[in-house]
Length: 127
Ligand SMILES: [Cu+2]
Image (cartoon, rainbow, N blue to C red):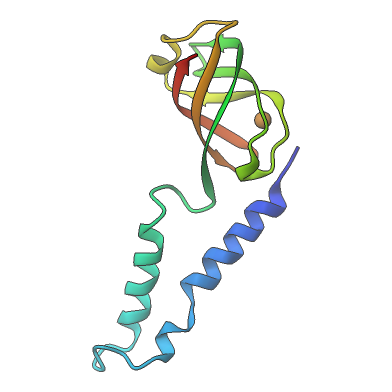
């Protein structure tokens, strides 16, 4: 599974919004033409409190493996429609402290930040 097309589409959308048409409207500060465009792009980005191209999602699943040394958790997770992922078993990065709260076999609800075809679990809770 390599949803790279989605990343490309997201990147294109970000680029399009970043160079939107706002610069062509009369600038509030005529003395600094490029400034409004920069400010506009920055405020658009401000809505997304995460790296460009990353998607935050919530899902549920079952823990199938935990590697505290590597900081990885393997989850048999349900579909994640935000990134068009089907249900699957895969490893996610996770902070060590987060891995202390769950065990193999637990059914969990989790938050994940997905970038490309990798993800980091940012919150997890046993159900
Ligand atoms: Cu997956």
